[in-house]
Image (cartoon, rainbow, N blue to C red):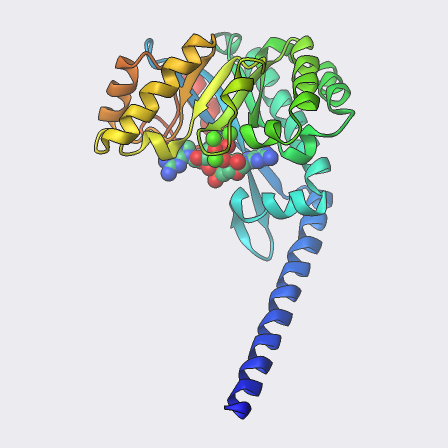
Length: 278
Ligand code: C2E
Ligand code: CA
Ligand code: CA
Ligand code: CA
């Protein structure tokens, strides 16, 4: 028993070392990727469920890694957050997304009223100079502040509520819009919700999928929509994959929808085609 314990300990130590090395390599690659600009933004259209027309886009980052291939954000955003690389990366995302939306608004007359919705990370949200950064980016890209939405999750706000409310108020003062992302998945305090100056609430995909098979999910979605409307927020339902889901959400008064039923996140060239054919 002793001998096999020793072996398994060695195997374990070896695995740990391998994991640590892999992780270190990923961190190094991330910094290199920022330098070499290996990132690309994809854009997923958000539709007005009443008119069926595109209202805006959410920007979603992708990494073209020479070593790893096409990498989705869930595989690197959490690590970029941990090591702080999300600060320069997030700034690039914001600038790129604003620049791109400005381009579309110039190129296509139908695009002049579209908004761009950009995901913010927790680390970015507590940067004291975030408001200045956003203001500078709006200025240099030329994008009107009313065309920019920032997506913020509940957990980011709940960590330090008073500081968060101050930050949100300052961001709102720029004239931008605020969206509460992944609603229902974190800890939300209903006693504070009305104090967050949010324009939009995004219902998480986990509630939307199967809302027609699960009575519970259906009740959760309809209650979230009611709550949002009472607090004068409009609602985006995420992850709509079926026509039945779309119809049910429309019936519940949900204003906007996003999901594979309409479109996947698209590279710029695909969005160009979409806007051209409108
Ligand atoms: P999220 O903000 O909740 O974004 C929605 C995710 O759902 C996206 O995954 C999108 O591709 C996916 N999605 C949209 N419609 C459907 C659908 O109908 N079915 C299914 N199964 N999925 C759908 P993605 O692009 O892999 O992004 C994952 C997460 O990574 C995002 O979740 C967001 O938290 C984070 N992320 C992405 N881009 C950025 C960024 O630029 N900055 C930061 N901080 N986080 C980002
Ligand atoms: Ca989001
Ligand atoms: Ca979301
Ligand atoms: Ca999510």
